[in-house]
Length: 124
Image (cartoon, rainbow, N blue to C red; front, side, top):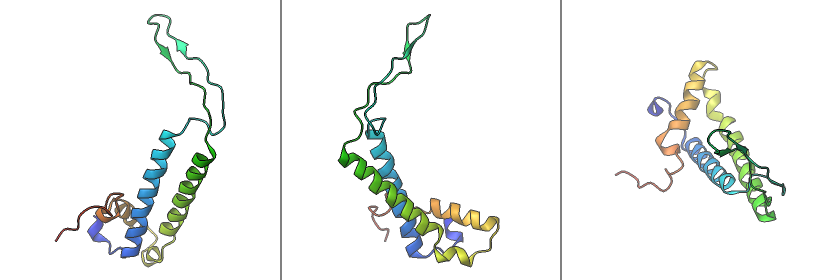
């Protein structure tokens, strides 16, 4: 499907950078405390028959200034790259119909646009 559309190299590179930035932002957010600000946790609910505790949260220490700055930097990068991809002049060359949606989806799946494509060995 990706071969159907003649994507310019710079658009493929922007999409690859967007995938990478999203992956980095997601990984960072998974490693951060659950709350930006320090907040108390709450107990879970004990199941009346099994005694299993579900729900609840430990207290959150909040983000450090460095964590907050890094999360903001990555989110700003994701937003900047999203805008660059979606407003690329290539999209103006396509008809505004279902084909445009197919092209956008094809770009997202393009092998050279995947997050690890930049480090993958080049096939000879």
